[in-house]
Length: 144
Image (cartoon, rainbow, N blue to C red; front, top):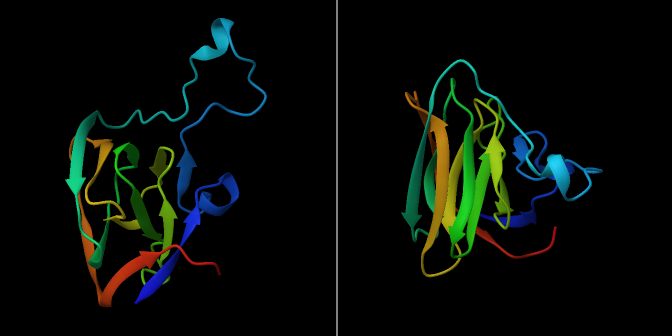
């Protein structure tokens, strides 16, 4: 199954998480150049990197107790996501900016380039659930 790739915008990505960017209306310079976007007080976080070159995915995973960032380092990558109650209603987003998933969002990544890498930040202890897809999923640049 091939799904279209969408751009990450506040509106399109809102059901799945947040874009890591300065809030609108914050002037540049001065004391406002440091903005806390997300606070997770219940658990310490860890930082990791993920390097990958897969063009399709056989399953998606989610983390019931952890939010998770996906921050592009190099290459072209896609984040495939779905809400918890509808794991087969997948959407694909081109990762041209960092995002932070909500808890319990099904997800997996694909590479569009020969290889891609992401910085990932998540809870120090991460529980995971996985669900197999009916067929492998890929994504392409096509219009809806």
